[in-house]
Image (cartoon, rainbow, N blue to C red; front, top):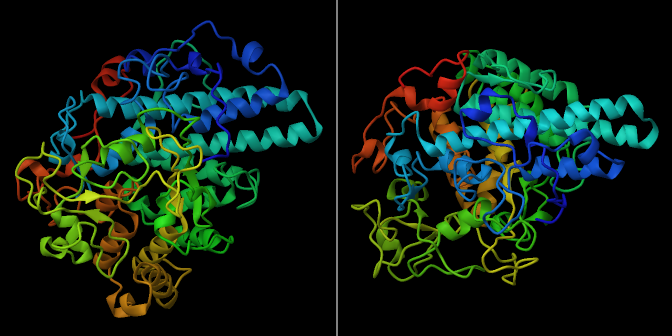
Length: 538
């Protein structure tokens, strides 16, 4: 949490949405009479406040705080309409890492793989993605005007702000390409007005994101030199590596060598593994040397029931330790298939409901007197295994900074060095040039030595297979918003041989149709914009 300070003022850029992606999603500007040039960008300091709004769009979904009253978008409850909450849900709930007990609308359809084009949660994330893209476009448009009419230190600063806005736009377009494929496309060149945004193909969008990130590389602050939680070159390199690692999924062409080029830049930029895995998920994780790009939260200043407040509260209940919150909501937990990746079984928890085994990344809760290992009723929270990974306390066990018993101060680590190590190993195994197996093994063993506290979990080159990498990504990165993308890349999300409990709405799990590797274009947007085409299968 903490920096970048989130100035949540009356700076609302949402009046400048492109038409077809407003009406179709019931996304409405909060104040259609706002004139951003005169009212928002009225002095130099306003540009940093407006930049903060761009970053805050991932953490907050309104202007008032506390969960309601002044949302960015209409058509969904402000708390459900939170960017991170919906991104996390669509990345985790359809996988082996998470399952939800609630009956909110269609929420159970995600683990069952039965969602449809009119799903409210899919529409919510889609609209959040394009809301962020829209306000980034408006910021860039106004920054361009100011850059042309100013000079000196402020001009230099404004160019950096603009590069950060372009990074955030690229980040949201990456979410779009990964989850929806061929989508509507607008930039700052498309002035606000009544028109139908053109449809960009997945390959074209890949090339656009790639070019954007390369163009802004030298305009961003050097890696680790910007304020905490603001994008720098390290974040741009990391996002490029993510793009290239998934290039075969997005475009049909492998780009593993390019992934290694940028992973080497990230790894050599001076980030280091945190000595404590647990510290990465506590309320003082802003001090971790491992986090490359987070979404920030603060118990006093980012008060909303989405984001990390959702993840921490919804994963708590059934006698689990509260870890700095005032009560659990009994919603999300994991399943036996995933816990088995840590070689844990039900009997291991006989005497300790928080038994970890030798791999201390296993942060689970199972009290066999009140919980059931097997899930017969998806709607019963205490059937399954609790997850205690994210906590609203400091790493020393004390209160969170700016502690609040309801609203969480823990940051969400979107990009961190451990992921770069895992990506490096995968890119090498898949044939990329610019890396080697020996280095890949050393990176994996660095993660496992932290997890085990010694070298007892170390692997050798013969152990380093793609199946191992997929499982190790799960063990290291679970609940961090990567799993759906990973399973798709490995061919295991839908029609592959790997099934898990309640996949396909069958208790023991079944394969599902491969068209579900992509989410559908929301039906309202499809009906509103004749340039769009529904994804196959929907």
